Amino acid sequence: MIHAYLMRRLHTAAGLLLAGLLGAAGAQAQTTTTPPKQEMRAVWVAHVFNLDWPRNKTLTPAQQRADFISLLDRHKANGINAVVVQIRASADAIYPSTLEPWSEWLTGTQGVGPQPAYDPLLFMIQEAHKRSMEFHAWINPYRAVTNANTSSIAASHVTNQHPTWVVPFGTLRVLNPGLPAVRQYLTRVVMDVVRRYDVDGIHFDDYFYPAPQTGVVFDDDAAFAADPRGFAAKADWRRDNIDLFVHTVSDSIQAAKPWVKFGIAPPGVWRNGTSVGGTATTAFQSYADIFADSRKWLQQGWVDYLAPQVYWTSTTTAARYDLIVPWWSQQVLPTVPRHVYVGHAAYKVSATATDAFNQPTQIPSQVRLARQQPNVKGSLFYKSTELLANPLGVADSLRTNFYRHKALVPAMPWKDNVPPTTPVQASIWDDSQYSGFVYLNWRPGLPASDGQVARWYVVYRYPRHAGPATAADLANPANIASIQDSTRFRDIWRGSSPAYDYTITALDRLHNESAPVTSFTVLLPNKAAAETALLQPAYPNPFSESTQLSFRLPTAGAASLLVYDVTGRVVSRLVEGPLAAGQHTVTLTAGALPAGIYVVRLRTEAGTYQQKVLLTR
Image (cartoon, rainbow, N blue to C red; front, top):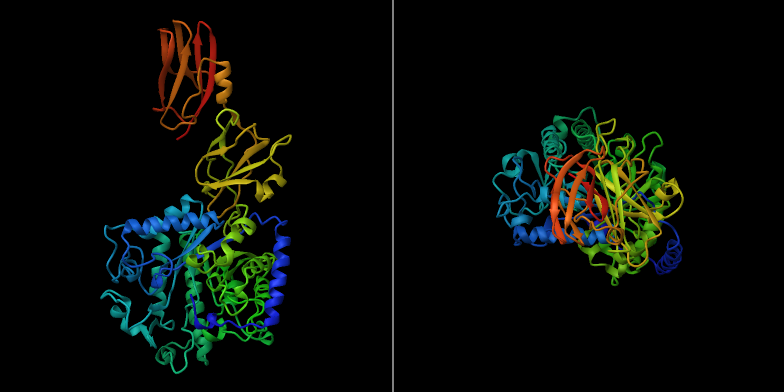
């Protein structure tokens, strides 16, 4: 992810002062601006060199899992809604693969898997989805060996199995992009992940042809001579090699799983010079230095998003952030709508930085400017460890200001624009005056017309008013109480009953949103049950396996406790006959009963009492 060119820190004293003043002024304005309801808020998680996860090669699988759960929980608390996790750094894998060996960064030795055995990729995807976070699998296509002098290399590694595919470049070993066999092999690797795992996206970073090094030559003359495809200039041929691979991967993902996103994080500058359609910059450039025509991929629609690594400030002489980000937004064609997410250099923020990254206002001002661009739909932060370290309060600023309200991942209508159906059998139990809680329960609706079902749910809590939720209620992210995969929600209140109403929508896996629930079945509150009936509140309610039903008889006598479905049919006879005075408890088991609402009715000599219970599955 990090090239030497990204480490350059150029600034002027005047620029630092200006950035600080603009950032401070913008920060004050932002506190009164509502954040967008849809926004990508992602972080890169690197495993190469144990940069982020796992933090070293000696962790046990249990320690690895605990660390990743902690990582997710902390990022979610800061407002992050997606993780971009490196799963293949150098023709290796942090998942069981028949194509490539286990990563040395997982266990210390390439080709040796974790013991006791588990599938880290499967685990990470499941944990991210539990938290309603997207999981994008980050793959480095061409880098085969990070350092030929020190890397652990298994016998099954591609450099040993296919040495003619490999080009030495200093201590790096790179798979030759000019070989059709390499493109086919890499497509197989990508599609193996797509087909076997429930990833939300496939993500490439900026490693295509290696970045130029003085005195080091990338020798691909033989490949050029063997397959020139009509190109006279090797530079054009190299760009076409990358184009062919990107286009093939895009088509392959679309054919296998059209809901899986494809994104690339190229260098922040596409091409220097406004005369060639680029930017007024003099920095490392994607087009000429690594032969990656990233703007073309965006405008051809071969990617669903680009996340250019704009790792500079607005005072960086060679590459100004405030010029580059608007330029990228302008490259999205109206006829080919795609997303741009800005890559931010959280790793550069430090009080000792020699440029404007030593200012706490730098990242906030960058996020603010990015939000002003019509085709910029969010941010990615490089990288996890530094962001969690909260340098100069960056994570605090995100959590309490920019990301203070939850956000949906932006929808991609070119992939899917059919919303899921509205949740059904919604119930609400306002027990706030008695126990301090409000409970909501619901069931998924039927599959939508495209066959998609609900993946997540959005619970809205909005100020109470006459009628159902309005469009304005749903548009305001301040009203989002939860984004979750569960069909149950508990809200906590203390004191008087809340002056709020609720509704629920469903999201499919591409974050299309359903129409909201417009009516709820109101279940009996605990307090009302305690005050008006001998029948005490069922617990748990709602229930999935069984619930306890308790009642009190002031005197001995005949009593019955029957359960009815919504048609009035008796489905369970729990108690019938004479009973002693005092407390009685029985169990209602779900058994073969279908999910739904049931009425529990207690008849005694003192009167009849009833309450509703909800069975979920």
